[in-house]
Length: 284
Image (cartoon, rainbow, N blue to C red; front, side):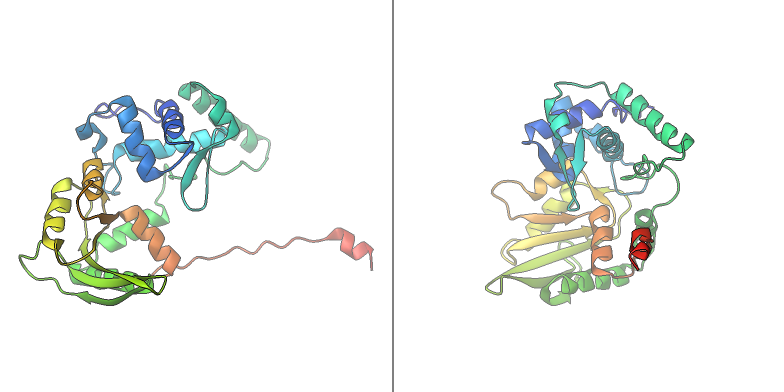
C-alpha cells in the first residue's frame, strides 16, 4: 500500500539495484537510501516521513524489505559489517520487475515450507514484519529511561568504545552539549569530541545538527549526536557538509547494535548444535 507518495517495497527493488551500480557496486545503508532518493527524485518531505516510532523513515523501512527480497533472489548480498553489494547476477541485469521478484521469492518460500525443506531464512530476515524484534524492544527500553540515566549510558558507551576523560557536563544554554571526551587513535593522535544524547522517538532534523555545531565551534575537533530515534536525510547531509566541522550521527538502529556489541544490557544466547558422526563409530 502506498503511503503519502512513498514507493512500495517492490517498486524500490529496481532503484536499489540501480543505486548500487551508481555507487560502484556496494554501499552502506546510509549511502544507499539517499542515492535512491536522488535516483527517483523523491521529495525530501516524503523521504523523511517516519515509520511509527522506530526511528526509521517509512522509506528506510520499505527499502529494508526491498533488500531482503533482492537478497533472496540472489541479486544482492550483505556482509556482517552491514555493507550491501551486487552479486554477479545483480550486476548483469539492466532492469528488473520488482513485483515478479516478490511473487517468485514468496512462492519459493511457501514451497520450501510445504515440502518440509528448511527455508533459506525468513522473508523478513532484515526487518521482521510481525512481532517485536529485540531491536525494537531495546529501543522501547531506552526511550523510557530517565534522561539523566540515558546520559550516563551514553557516557558508558563512549568509555567502553575507547574514549577517555568522558564527562557529562550539560548546562542550560549550551547548545545541547551534554558532555565531552577524548578519543586516541593508534595511541598517537587524539581528538576532543563533544557529544549530545537525545532520547527521541522521531527523526531529528538539520536544525538540531546546526545548533549543535554552532555550540561546538572552537571547543572540539568533532561532534557526536547519539539518539534513540533517527535522522532525516537533510540532517545527515548537514552533518557532513563541506567546510563545516564534522558531526557523527548515531541513530537508534546503530545504538542498539553497539549495545549488543559491547554486551551492555544485552545478552546473546548461542544455540548448541550437536552432530553425530556415524562414520567415526564404524572405525572403532
